[in-house]
Image (cartoon, rainbow, N blue to C red; front, side):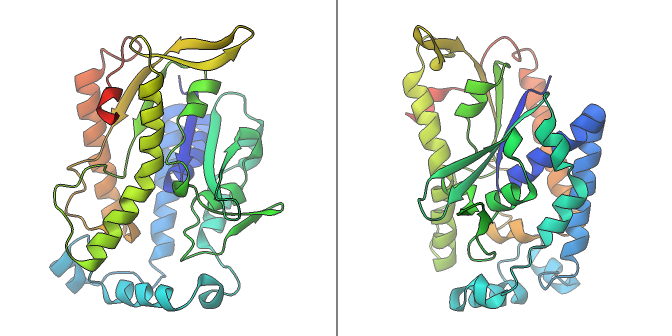
Length: 307
């Protein structure tokens, strides 16, 4: 049973699209919704300036590090802000989310709890949008890269990407959901086998470390709180903090996306998205083959490695 979803940035989009599809048709509905959403993202990207030509694919594959369009865009974002380059604040993701997610139904649903992270620009603090607060603006806030998009205003606050403060938030799932199995799907690799030496590689890796820092901090807190294996005193009762046993699981991408180049993440070509989907399914199948007997019985994630 799917009890709750927590996501940040692209993970926030996946979470709301998955939940919307799940409410319409269970697992099949979720797969169909995700397929349709990312196909629409790819179709929209075909109209943009970052579409690669055949020669670029032949030379650089999935990577966009040496794409003339990417180099130009990168240079522009260093010279001018999105408020100057895009004065109307146009964001193509708004229309896509409105077309593929029934936010009113999500807000009113009682089956799946959702937690979407964003970062308050003025305070620098985490803002967690829960199920009843969900809107297209909340998801856009979670995925708002400040060098590309205007900050998203919700009521009197302005928000940037949630990766600066939680990526993704785990404790709300443990405190507010009934399920005792928690699966962390981590897209940003913690480990890189090679020390970066080029300027852009250094900048990219430093950003990667920064976006992983909050997840590492949360895992370190959980490791410090863990009493008997899998027991965490994180739920409140009239007698104080109540230790609850959880089974933690971890699906990683280390070694899978190595060599694709950091800028491959802006590649929305449909063939590449299908390639990522297939890699994800292979990773998930391998994990299930190794741990299907552990689900509902024991943790497969060792927190001590993060201390």
